[in-house]
Image (cartoon, rainbow, N blue to C red):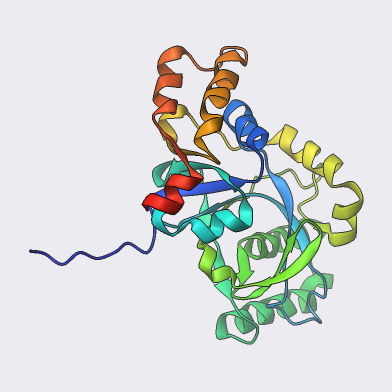
Length: 255
């Protein structure tokens, strides 16, 4: 008999949400990017002394059998999509680092170099460099740091999440690539609405591997919503989607 090796990653990318209506909205309207406040604790405070919010849609690359803790943190409702779909749509795993590591130090040296020559560059050159540094920061996360949930900061080992991200390409003349914590708290609804009207992360029913609900009692009502919303899905597609449904209880008890 051959040796069986347990996979540490999945062939599916999972997105979780705390409410059933949020999951229904994703199925009917695709993924809408939202500004997420991210820890900058891996950087020297002289370079960046505040946490910033970036527009994104987040997923985890965790096998179904190991999702229990993740569900407890992010919500009992989820959608699992094929990793091939993620690759086609330019999703990427985030880069985990820590303060003082060689990679972080190298990035900081590049930022200091940019600061030292910035005055010699024209506006377009400054913008290009700034955008490139921002794109790297948008895909970088501390190994361990602060996570904001419901307005509160808690310490978390982010490395356990195996996160993938979709960052929308935005026209920086019209849209904010990042927000401060204060800006997000004051007007998050406005900023999220602006960016979600401009860009959405689309998928088709054939991209879906799993639909995760909290309990079996919700299945019939969930299907009724899909059947009644402007006939987006025909009966054949709804039948296929129904076959993809599993519940949080099944994950906890059977995997």
